[in-house]
Length: 498
Image (cartoon, rainbow, N blue to C red; front, side):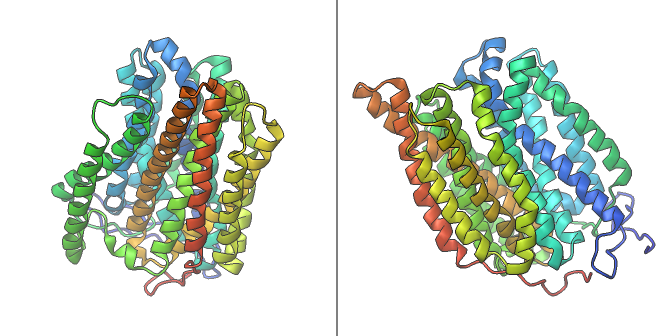
């Protein structure tokens, strides 16, 4: 095994040990395999936590005596924090290195997970979710950057298949896990179940994780940080408010944060273009010039809009239109989540052999078919039809995520891996907020119109969801068109040899 070297440490920071390079035969060393496995488990836990609040919210509302409008801040604050922190992670990973970023991410997540079940009031619970979200925002770009750095190009599809398991399966399993725990033990137990896992991961990571790339001495640009907060925070808040405004009057017109966010985004882009001339950008936008990055990012964005629309919409149909309880609604979505988990590595191996297009094209078509199946749901629909639709949807998403991630990041130079991962994660958050806003707005507008015509609540909810799912099917047509632009990225010049 190669002797350890040291990184170029940040100003005033001690140099950190660097993990040895991969073996000459291209296989992962045992140490690299352990690091990636640990990051996958940690990433799964933090993303799983992201979608547990939807099912737990009614119990939280009763216990803390809050309204639904107030309770939604548990999710909104989480999404806002993610949107604000993720654009900074490209700079953060280069500054702290793999080890420092992992310890920071899991320490923050564990602290928030401990604070949440101890919170006596709603304000402290929201604070705990913000702390959790900060750690979550660092973890996913760290995972993708580490995979791209350690895994040779001809094996990346297989490993990125496991990353897609984290990104796609964990949100699908969150409602089922939360429903089971809340029904049996109450909402605080959701956090107590997660806490030991996160603490064990933190301890093992502190012992095992080493830096896998050279740290950079870049300084944080305060103006870029302020513009990032205004841009991504404003867009996510505006999109979230847009969906909620269709249900009830908002204190701030959603157009205000959307306009502020759009203007700030333009200024943020301008600032990064100036700073990247000296390699000091907070988020280096040269990633968009890399072969395959923009098409892969676009396909991922469309798929995330569809997935988050489903995550919000299908439980509403199951509970409010079909009359199922929260636990049963969560369990109906469990087989699809497990299917995605099984297919992730399989799709990754296929990507290594055939590239993205033979996978993404049928995958996008399958998601569109599933959306059409969901658009037929109503109060009397059979449960097996819902299950079949969700399995088709899960199959399609499994065929999209791994190829989209791998082809997008595969053409980047190693120095841009952290910035590319940050850009992908940022677009995920914006797309998720857009999908949620689109679905909620369409569902509410249509259901209100049906209610005014005398329809029952169940029929009105089903009618609104039918319209939203039809639009979701139309959105997937765009993913099919974008898939034709995908190609398997060649290793860029300057990539590490394996």
